[in-house]
Image (cartoon, rainbow, N blue to C red; front, side, top):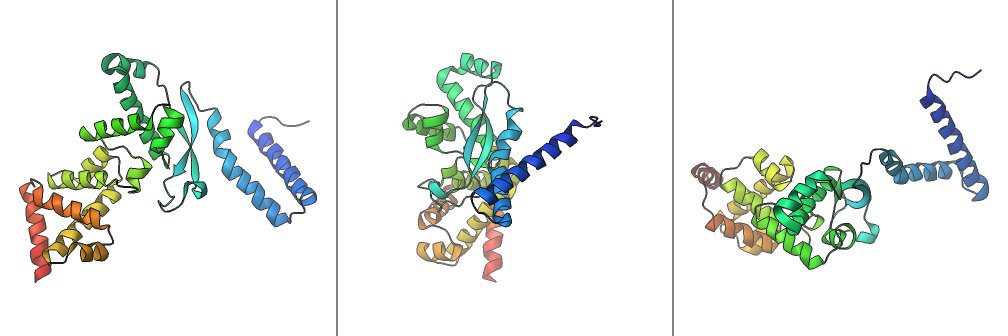
Length: 264
């Protein structure tokens, strides 16, 4: 008589048996080697297991969405990009109803944009304007672009793929990070306000300092872009911010000390 005290044990045994059946069918039906069959089974689990694991954890109003992996470089075309399964809250019930009542349809859309973007980002995925317009919120791309601009004017930068990966003409999040730092915000505050990790914030500030240092050494914009490994438009933007920003005294002192130290 079987001991059924551990259902999970028998489930694992059943799963192993199914794996063996599938492996044998690959070997006999497709003439795969045992190694190839094992690789196919593993690939199947990597692709579909997140979906099966998440089905029972979804709550009403949530959906599973395929987002571009944050690890995918911007140079990789979408057809070859790696994707991750993320859980997005399309409708948060009472929370969304309160926002709709207080701020109207546009306010609700802004609220959902922020929530959904951050949910995907925290799970290792990046969404695009096209994702929101054509698949998630079902509205025009121009509407989403206007929403993004409106949120930016309030100091809210969404972690979209075009922004996080610096694609297209978007350099706004870098500019905001530098401006926040110059006005005295610490790395942790900037990270929270811009939805960027603290190492990312530090990396942007370090590159800004390098640009200012090279400027102080009388390099032209093209040379600075080459030496700092940045685009020329971004270099021009960083220099413009440095020349026009109202810096708090201790930031100005820090940059001046950097320039003096390097001149010695």
